[in-house]
Image (cartoon, rainbow over all chains, first blue to last red; front, side):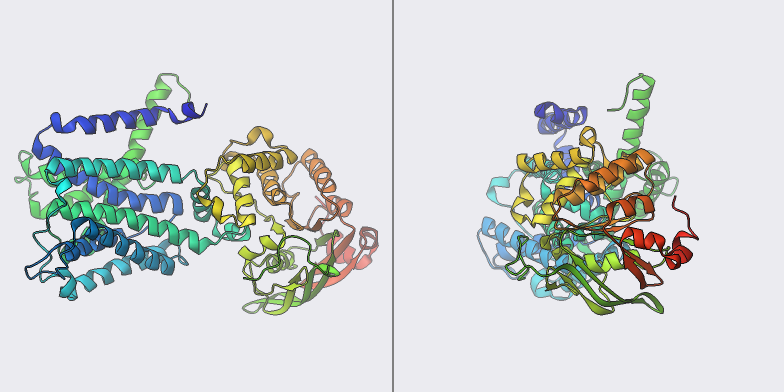
Length: 335
Length: 261
């Protein structure tokens, strides 16, 4: 009974997808795996934290890219030695990983605790302020961000070959996806959904509403920090511009493209974004109609617009609707 | 927080709930004007009055959803005037809302489960699966008491109105409260559902203190041992159902103008 509950069509489809992704390095070109797919997994993991907060907690956060950036900067500061950029603490790479994640999680807890008494548009604005202030902190305190960013960041030896970074991204993505889904069924996850639906009711049932929001924000910050580490290893560098307002909005757009109520949609959105980013210039004739790389954001904007008009639930919503239609045509009944 | 445990305190106070000279002002509007109320342990009290009389405001003050502008609220002898609502379930308080406020996205079982988890402040249970056996059993038991056994895995948002009210009740009684506040439990129910509601309320533990806001006079007068009439934020009269029914003043301000549905 229990096993059957979990063996839904959706779970099987996702398991199949993970299998294909695991075999991908022997099926696709190194460029596709190490550039397109690794980036997709990293951005998807970060965007999934936005979806997690929105879906289970009813909080739309614009601070997730800041967490992503903090983890990257902290790793850079701790792991590098010599040279002129950052603090150059020269720690062992894994000590630097622990330090980066610890700092990110602590910052997320503090920021989450402050933001936990706000909801809706006020929460969105407050987290936007976090993002902007965070950007200026790193842009102006060059001691921790290096003039023009921290460069030549090496990843731990374990993740040396690029394909291993891809697998690390895949592993963390699967863990985060399964973890978030499972968390939704624990008492904490239920309480979080209760807080999303009716905070006043939750308080009268005896729940500490701000604490639940703050803990969810902390967890999302932790996961965004993991994505930030992968990102800094993949990029080899990080600079303050990479966490400015533009990229902050891009991460939200990725979540919106996939669908804010679907965890899997975060990776789908990231995939679409990376595909457009990577291959737009290769499309025949696009430069003739005036679409150059400089207009990349316009193209992304148009894509978001089209998706929002077709389905407010993003690509996942479109997929679900198509599946619903097929099922109806086949005479099947929705479970 | 040195809150009294849910068990009976050493010296049982005369009143389970005391409302002392409570005034609530929303800007210029005075929703309550110096209301005093003593509710003894095990008492069944109905609060009636026309719309806008301040009934729900009084509930919100007792439940801690709003703080009174002046005055005090004591629960089991403890001054709770400014105690946040989330600490009150641990004093044995449970409430329902006028508009059913079950969590629409969760199942019946999960809704009751949340009521149980919140009431006990079971932070250790936070990480446990919602399938925890004891909680499951207790949730099933509460659902059975309100005739929702067949709907345990139904999503609350998809329940019929009457069933959603039953779920509200299940969430309130699942925690085995000492004080139960019911805000119009019979509103929107069919005749048959009202009968079952009365049956259920009559079956509650004798030690339970019950406060009831009700527009359905039939339900209110059958359940309550004492009836308090509010109008314009003030207590107009209090007495047995018979006294209140016979009072011409009450008739004029309430029963006469608004026939029971």
